[in-house]
Image (cartoon, rainbow, N blue to C red; front, top):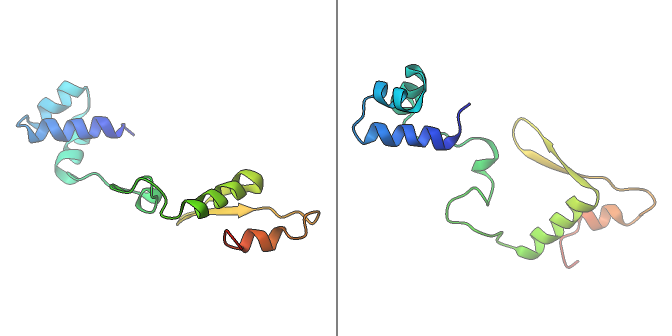
Length: 112
């Protein structure tokens, strides 16, 4: 898979008037790949978590609730890990029996 910058450059060159063959030669790529980027799929595809991630969404710079985000991040750093599933990433947090209030604290919202 080629980097997004190369795909964007190919689209930009094609929109500036170069033929697909000229763009392919100039970037050292094969014709069918450039044709796919410029004709078959002229708009970049946004996949996976980029559709749900606040960092990947244009115009949004920070979490809407910084305290909740910091709390969740602390749980992740302490006893959590992310599991990649087919549809969404899942945060799993391990609660040890040596810390009996762990489950209630993990499920409570910040400030409770």
